[in-house]
Length: 152
Image (cartoon, rainbow, N blue to C red; front, side, top):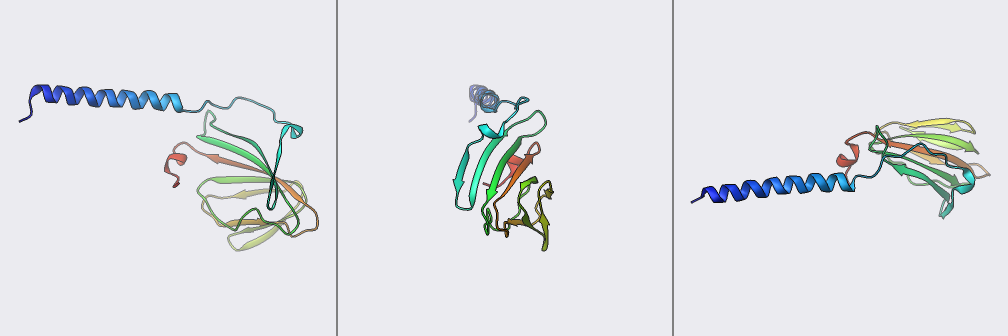
């Protein structure tokens, strides 16, 4: 038989749990990125099997769960990964060289200054089929709630 004391203890336990989760959520939430400048000379190039990658930033903003930027350099004949798709959108800006861009079965070339948009959940891939390295900036954004629903 459930007593008044049992109900009281259960209510107190539930309230304490909710309060603890709320406090923990506010504590572990990363800070919002502030206005910043990243100079090319300060970005360390990490060697990769396809060329190099420079991490620029990855963090929460006032309007996004996450905004990320990295810079990839592809050696001739290389691709950073196989064609794929994902829920977040990407914007790429070619700094130097020429990329072969595959999107949903259509292939285009993108040279210096070209801007490439990769839409949500659409198949895309890149390759350097030229004779010189290609360097491009990648910007990815995650609207509110997208990171929580993204499969691990």
